[in-house]
Length: 326
Ligand code: SAM
Ligand code: SF4
Image (cartoon, rainbow, N blue to C red; front, side):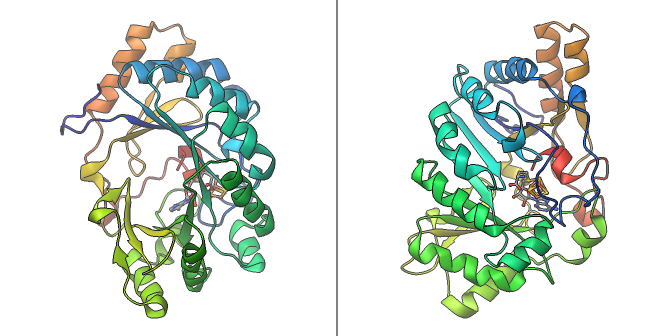
């Protein structure tokens, strides 16, 4: 098992399969984003080898992300291989949902267990403004296809941005009345690429909750008050689904963090909001032994930072969100 020096057992790996994306969300990347050449990204076999190493070190939970993981070539084959790696108990994906209509079933058959789909508004014009390129209808069809394919419970992620979608949290919350989904509201975090917007347009989880409670009344705590990953869970009285609030900026959950990230270019990123990374891909390509790679991972995990430094004004600027893997 892999522990950091604070005694946290790190066993959840988010693997970014690509930094490429078919959308250009304003809070994630600039519209004229340039992507890494394919040769700089981990090849399928490199991903599988590193997954096996992490699994041997006790990692049992994998989330595939990006960029947009569904635009990666051979995504179904990649999911199948990772899901059948000894020691891996759960494989999930965070996706913008645009391609799920056709991919949900093959992904489920390959071993994917659940999806988190990003959806910031139900309104077509606002969706286009936020994602620059997207059609909300594609995402909606993708969500229904995911549910149909059994990728459940469905979780929807909404980043709330002042001046873009703060009123839409009410309609998104209303979805839980009729659907057994978890709708999660995320405080926007600052990275490279859109730092000005990310710092000046934050809506806090408390403000989001207040807006929802003005319409639906006081929310009931769900999940016995326990965090679900990073989300504090509530329910509109009588609703089928739940609401989650992810307050990474105003109320970080660093003490219970169990995760590490592998970027699409093969760097082990110890904290989303800290620049520190350990390069695994270069040594792998230079012929490092499995034992050497294992040691690099264990040393990296040991030195995982306690938490982020946003309160002290420390913003990670070496990558955009899409280059890290959210
Ligand atoms: N493309 C996929 C998607 O959008 O779901 C996966 C990658 S995306 C980087 C992962 C998650 O990060 C999404 O839910 C997205 O909304 C969120 N995200 C992107 N930029 C963010 C930011 N600046 N602050 C908070 N969350 C952000
Ligand atoms: Fe693409 Fe996801 Fe970033 Fe939007 S949030 S630009 S869908 S990677």
